[in-house]
Image: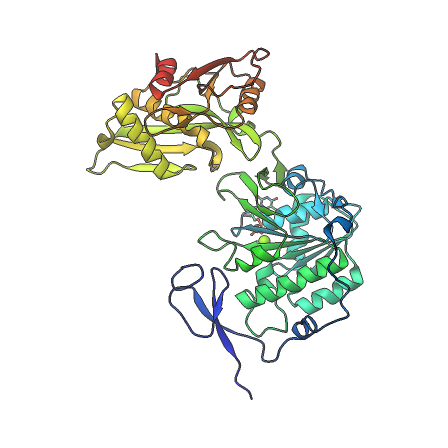
Length: 457
Ligand code: TYD
Ligand code: MG
């Protein structure tokens, strides 16, 4: 028997080499190369896809001769998902939904297909049995006459079933469990994932059937190993959130048919995921009258404004090294803000433990919450609460200046809508905005000292 040919593939970026190497020359990661067996003979698809083929119907055309038409989109009856996809699922597109195990990817997708009464859907599961899926569907308390379930991991068999069913939408849960006979290595390996997704892409484009792929995320947070997968697909969505909190965020990382600034928010319930169309509700259920260490930020995620609570606890450091901990906020950024506080408000860094938390288990990347972070720390340190009904937005610079933030109008309008009576914003941030109609008291501040004076007197 001929010796099986093996190559070494980087599990991080998918580049390969005939020999093992310690550091990947392409992505710079250490110890990521693994041995993989590749096809003994060149696969059929390779030979027919070669450049010698002349009967191809694809020829060069002038760009002005191409008729532009709107992509036909499928309404998924799930507003958050539709929006993140850029207004619905495009026919013939390949969408990857990534996320950590147990975050709710299967739930999200199954719930969506069960809601599609008029479309024929094929849900291929390589992870769960049909009985398990039925149990889940019962739990979701939805039923549809048009959803087929297929428990199969062999790609060729999946395609032959798909030919018979002719679905309007196909789901593959998950890409890491599917294998093709053309490749020798085990399911989930780089070459399997690459070959399978390329074949699925071809199927999607040729049949015009959109396919949703589910993919696992590895411990570093990238979609398990294969970055290659992100290049192949049209759209990459990431489902994230803390398993122990109820809220889940669906983020678009790449989208060939829409903006990546969009974001969907869900709440995990007993009977499935509920769309959260008003994200500020994360905050509004709480009453924090008289509590020190709480400040409210007018934040943006993508293009949606929402108000979020930042909480801080400052206590005297008992041990030599003061403790610092931040949940939902960048720790290095918090340390920088603490240094600004030391310089500007006489906050003794070396003697204090500081714990910071963004309520609801969300992770916020918007720099405009700086002002609220620094205010909540000072509020806890002084043990003075911030007046109810006051919120703020502003990025804090190294010298304590408050820097302008984007989309200030939307933040102000959101705060007004939610019944706040005052908002602190950066000085000169209001250019061109007609604030006359706004009933909210807008306070413009230049420096953190000025903001502190307004907040704590
Ligand atoms: P699941 O969709 O299986 O996660 P993934 O496919 O991303 O691995 O979600 C599993 C979790 O969701 C599980 O811990 C139970 C929880 N869950 C609910 O809270 N409510 C529900 O209605 C369902 C179906 C699941
Ligand atoms: Mg799953």
